[in-house]
Image (cartoon, rainbow, N blue to C red):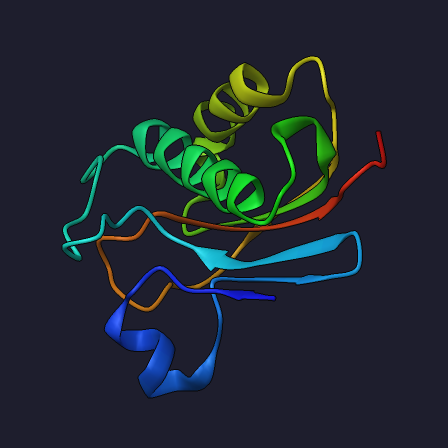
Length: 127
């Protein structure tokens, strides 16, 4: 199953926001933009991280999973010196779950307003 966020970029670039195959859900790199393509938390890496993680959780739920099914996050930041703010937001969301994660500094993201981009993987547990 493929899931879209209705971003115009999904059709232009040719990707899905999320894909579920069996009990595995993969979430594409996600930035802090809403359905109207407006940036959320502009200039604030902590707020962008919270927004992105909640957006990722919503797509895992659309795919039939829950937050606890997330087993990996991959965090790309444009300024690694802000790692504590990113880590604080990640910890608030995942403190009890503790998925494996990576935080990588990149030269830039697709737009200078994006301070962080996150990918995620989930494995939906059978009840």
